[in-house]
Amino acid sequence: MYLYTYLSLQSFVEGCNVSGGENALVLQAENLLHAVPSKEYQYGLSLLRKAIRLYEEQKGISLEKSKQDIPFFREKRRLLIGPELDIYKLSFYADEHVITSQLQLVEHPYLKLAFDYEQLAEHCLFENMFLIRCKYDEEEVVKNFVSQMDREYDKFFYDEEHSGFTADSHFFSLLYNACLEVKEPRFAGEQEWRLAVLRSPSEVDYRYADGKLTASLPLSLPLASIRRVTFPDHESDELNYSALAGFMQHIGLFPERYLERLLEE
View 1 (tube, rainbow, N blue to C red):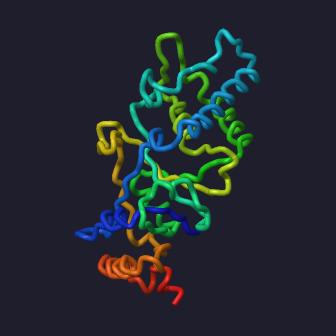
View 2: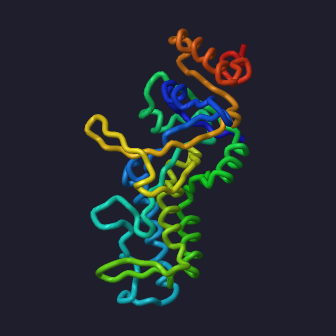
View 3: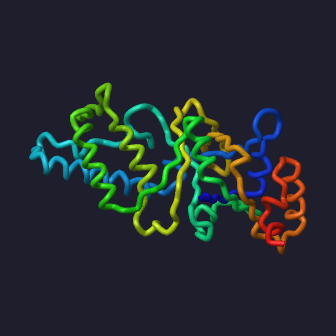
């Protein structure tokens, strides 16, 4: 199986590292809670809150003892409660023909890269990264959250002053999963996968441009996991296409094997 992603030609050239060690493509992962519309991750969190309510109804827990209103974010910050960690992600898609909202943010000229799923998954396993398929079935998502409440409900707590967890609680994992994995059913056709890591605000890079301060994290992917490179503007931008073929040969991705137009010929 292949997973596809879009990136600018500039990002591809600047991200390729062939100096010593394994040849790699370094991409800048975005802070999930800053990069996607708030309604997207709020949807996943709303299903987690619904699961808490359903669990309490099943167990006969009174409203006075309810945890339905537990805050999911730290006060005055777009940061989830629990460990001080942010989610950084790269998006991939199982369907190469899907035109996603991500493409609107990619600077032209751009490329579409096809990655080998197994090699990408193996790399994530060794590098402590997560490769996760997004979930679009609302009923199944809520059912899964409810089932985990049997283990987690008594391990997180809330009062008017603070929220907290016992030492063996994994409730914060449910929060991260709700934001990272869950998407509305209307986006199911995208078949999105997300490669993600958790990092402290002190471990990432910051850049100020166009009136906006953004955080990002460089993630290294092996060039060997790339299976195909597509340059959609090859007919109207022959100079860049020709230079791309030369650059790929320079980094060890021989264009006759990887560059889509040459493959067709």
